[in-house]
Image 1 (cartoon, rainbow, N blue to C red):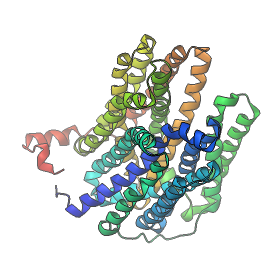
Image 2 (image 1 turned 135 degrees about the vertical axis):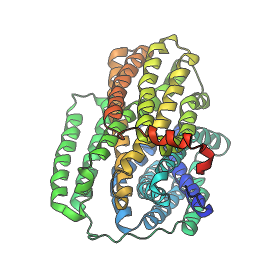
Image 3 (image 1 turned 120 degrees about the horizontal axis):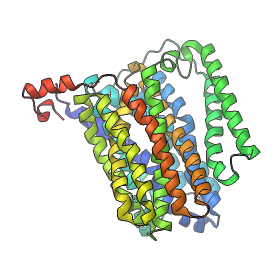
Image 4 (image 1 turned 120 degrees about the vertical axis):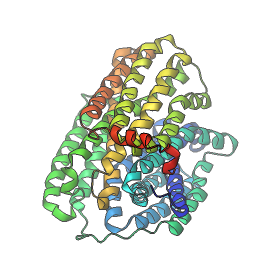
Length: 474
């Protein structure tokens, strides 16, 4: 296998840094919310929109960003998105009011929604198909590293300087990623048959996703039977129906082309990721709360307490790319999804001991599973479509991740509250049993539907031929 050239490695590093910045921004600001409340003399429900505005905008517009990247060029989409992201980071850093800060976060979400799918498309295009696993491992590993480091970076900057430096830090890092991409990434610009923009598709999917994400975010406050929640879910269903009709009429300029919609291998990966994301997001929210509320950890200690899961996730993600290229997606998807299924089960079984050591095995097992599963399922899904549609495919995969996380949080919170009846640990035990059941669905999809036949014969042939892993390049 031909070694990867120095320029390609530099380009991959730049892509990884850009993903790190985007992922870090999801979690770094969480620890700064109390200081933001104090500085602006506002309440937590308003300050929380500093987090929600970015995540909601990002999740809603990412599919549009992916389609625009495939239509008009990934480098162009990346540069435009980076300019928006960096400019609005500076705006957030100097924000004089909470309204200014929230508006800056909305626009940062737009920049991120352009950057992420462009990064995915450029990364997969930079490597040959037989190295696709390396691309997926790099991107998801960098994302895991960003998520894991976010609370630590945010906590240090907030304590030592100010929460504003969380935003200022984005400027030099983004500038470096843009400079290296400008110098090292020179992929051919697409020549699409039809560059007409599918506005009905963009509007319908965006409104529908906003309604869905808001419904599952607000169900904690209002309950499932509240007319507002029912209305939001009804809007989502209506917009989804309208979207499918709009896409059938749009033909060649559809936001999601028919070839992508009908691709079963892509659909299997997206469905499995949706189910696993329900578990991942619930763990990210409620395990730190368990450490804070039950174990009396400080915010920094709770961030460190998540390292058995998040650091393992990041480390295994980088290794999984090499394993994917050697063995194919099937065995990695099975082992990864099995770990994600068993992990919440272990936490449900031992959380009642109210000891950090009792949940560490479950945390570590979930980290191992997430590190194997997410890069594998993402690469299997993205490479199932044509090369010219891979930014869009990566965006849709991430949309399913966001949607699955939102749905999972809504269901998990409902079970936690109703089963716990005021007892947080008892509710958490029931909630993680539910999460294990949801992960079981992703495990079954991994066994029967993702990735086809394992590549054991190919791996055996290489080993018998005397090729060590080092002989195949990095």
